[in-house]
Length: 264
Image (cartoon, rainbow, N blue to C red; front, side, top):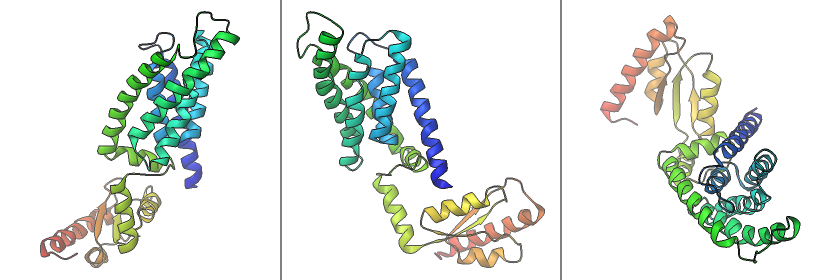
């Protein structure tokens, strides 16, 4: 069930990135330069991986060629960098700067060299040399890569990037998140959740996925004892009932007394 949910989220994220990539592609664009395309490539690589990024770049390129009259540069100037961005990111163990470098190398070097025969031979464009597109591609990837780096770094520092990756079923490279999860697996803290029937299964699964142990006791006569043995208390006021309304203050009071006493 979780795998199916993650797959659905990946498809939705892919569709969103394709749509955004097409819409923002005219920004700062001249032939041989489309900085926003490289921004999308890097973000997709970090969130979804190299194959999804390759698919995203291909779909954006095809749509731009069909609907906007863009030459094949829409593909040659995107697909190589999109794939290598994801490869470099994974090979480096999740370094965002490596995702940017993969985009710069894949598009700025490989893509620019491939663009020459495509435009000169297939499209009949004259006056071109092998490195004609290289300066423009390097400039565009550097611009888009810089924006992507700041954007993803901000998400990473806020802890949002790891959350996105986890929900999408991608590998989480954030060391702090991995260390916390590993610590939970070793210590297996008991998490006492007083919640409602709507979210009870999700809460339990989230706690289990983090490596901890959930307990969902909510009867007023048992919550004090349960909370006194738990390491964490989580309360959800949604869809409240009289029994939970009575149990929550008891559990909260127990948790506060436990914290003040210094017990773990």
